[in-house]
Length: 122
Image (cartoon, rainbow, N blue to C red):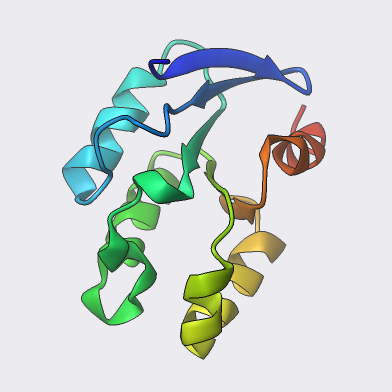
């Protein structure tokens, strides 16, 4: 499966292929944002597609990638089980909690949970 645009909960979403290229740099984030400019209102990236450094906040990879989505006002959903990463980092747990309370970056366990979040922006 390639990255594809899907309508989810009435919202056009770029749903990224779990086997696609890793998202490891701000340029990778910009590439996804660019691919989403044809009427897409959110981007869903499977957690395994994110470079492992994303989940180690000291590397600043998460902040740099997330900031690109915020700057372009494109919601980002990190989709999948990140419990292993959360168990290792209280700072990451705080980031996930704060992000999920805001409207630009969400961490959700699956696409069904994403649909719930999307209904709020539909």
